[in-house]
Image (cartoon, one colour):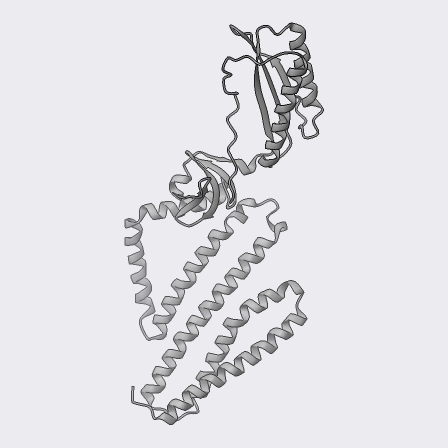
Length: 349
């Protein structure tokens, strides 16, 4: 490029600054007008898309101003190439903002996914795929604007894509696994789950892996291909909790005491405000060599584990009061673990 005089350089810089000022002014006025005409819920979208549109307008005005300047031909060509590349990048910015707005709007429309929760789960993955596609198109557009053969570039990308696909089978398996997780929905972001021996909160479902924040605050990444074939226990989907306990009473406990304890614990569970519709079960399962076993089980209508812990604590204390009030004592023999699995401790997400 021929060297430019300082007057020409000043004109180029001045025209760019003037184009930016005019574009910002026009963008502000148009955004203000649209915010008044459109419903209030669309004002955020207008503000988010204003920046890219202002940049496109500024570049267009700048390129238009360059037409009226006396510049060397190679300098004019270089400036036009720079303008085209910046225009492509600004359009990419606009497309990314538009894609995010569409996904956010769809995610906020709960009525659209009332019967299609699987489609809602695919929205984050759809956002990432859209971003990758936009970047790929941008690369092709930039090379095309510089005069390279787009057809040859696309063909080269196709052949390279096949080679990459053969060399990255595991990666493709994980990407397909991400879509399988989105369709089948064994877990979602924010769920409290158990995968293999890991218990924690799902923080992110990515294209390659899913990240789980454990109870010890470590981060475990599971490849999506492996996760799609794993056994996943989803605690967040629980609709109720089971209270189960076994009391080991001394062999000296009389039948009258056993009957009193059984009936009072049964009444305690039946009259509890949080109990679900299923009837509780309180039965003797002994005797053993030196004890009687009394097992109590009931379902409670709550999905909050912290609330269930409070209910369980109070029930255990009430049961101990009933046993003491009947004049009985617990046996010193060890009590085996209840049939129900121990409840996991909830961790902060």
